[in-house]
Length: 333
Length: 254
Image (cartoon, rainbow over all chains, first blue to last red; front, side, top):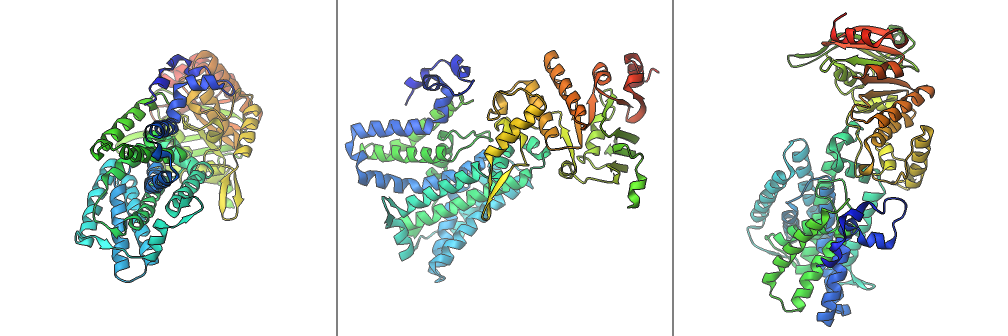
């Protein structure tokens, strides 16, 4: 999609260097489209689906879409912090499963839902911390470590749960899933809060600058006294924390803790990050981009479902869009 | 403090005595005595592998020497790591410049020294203040930069070198250490960086300059130290030497 806008000649890319570029120069600049791929994609999808299936634009459907997107938005934020350090967290979806199972088991053991939620988030944060320590202190490549923890915590989840789902009949989680404040359901507010906090952390704190510096040029950052290993560990811990929040939202949504990994959550979190204009080589990130990327991917699935396209085609569509987005990223300056 | 009396000279901002460093079986340098005087540009020259860079790295805390003593401002064994050296007032312009391409000029100038506003328990970046001070730092050294909000990736080699030197000098550093600052630059850019080093000296910042370029060293420095095969073999005043003498000292033909 949006290939028509991609025909801009590459040699104009440097034309708008001095001062504020004019709108036309901006629209002819491929880097502009690369930076805003997720927004352009979302707007494009809304137009296409809105015309072909007007129900798509109904308030009820848009609210359902946002609710469905909340989990992916939270996970994409976690993934963004890791990708910003030039890493990747493949254990994200498995951590969600582990968090869900711990939540279910602690709740079923009668310790109360709040303790269950806290322990679930602590457990997934600990997984992230462990990832960070193994990658920095162990000097093992990120994808090997997180692939290892993916398998490890999948096994742990199966062992703990005995492979059986646990029902979680909590009024608190029920209210979290179905209640709303103003126009949005609570999960949407959780996602919005995560976006705001993460945006401030990335753009308005020293940690954010050090994170981007670590991802951009680790050696340079270290020679200026930035503790790059700590920064990386923090990024993975944030990713784990986000997985914990996502686990709460997931259990609230489906009413039980399933010992099953939703692999599309992992793939889509990486896809949202790529769509959001975050460099996979690190050093360049935003929060709004991946959040909108997550919305876009959810809108895609939602729209295709409304158009009665078989669910079998949805991964194909997501895959095509992600590869396309990665191609567009090559024009990023 | 009796330690002050151990200092080789009160004129020295940075000095060392009997300094040795080896990596496994390979000797980087042995029994080196060296000093950089306050307010002067001190050059260290030598052939490839003479031990210049390793000596500099030991002096600024990157490596820990195996033997010998380092004095900064008269104080012995000053730094355990580069961070401490930086806090004490030694700034290093690394050969790779240590710039972060994806960050802006202002962000690079204030990297790991960010200005923050405290709001309750939170510390938020004061970007406006950093941009203003970044402009002031650049103009103090007459560095021409279209915008401090520009990403460093888009700058030329000379501009990048200037940013790196500006960052080193801008923090009120007592001593700026530069390792081959013009090695990768063109003629015009080299001239700009040399002018920058002169301005630093005018502002009474002490400079240690590692270089291959004997003409440049004679133009810029007050005192020249010569290393050869891991030893400090000579030191001369720049005004009292010739290019031929330096070549002879470096190659050992003298």
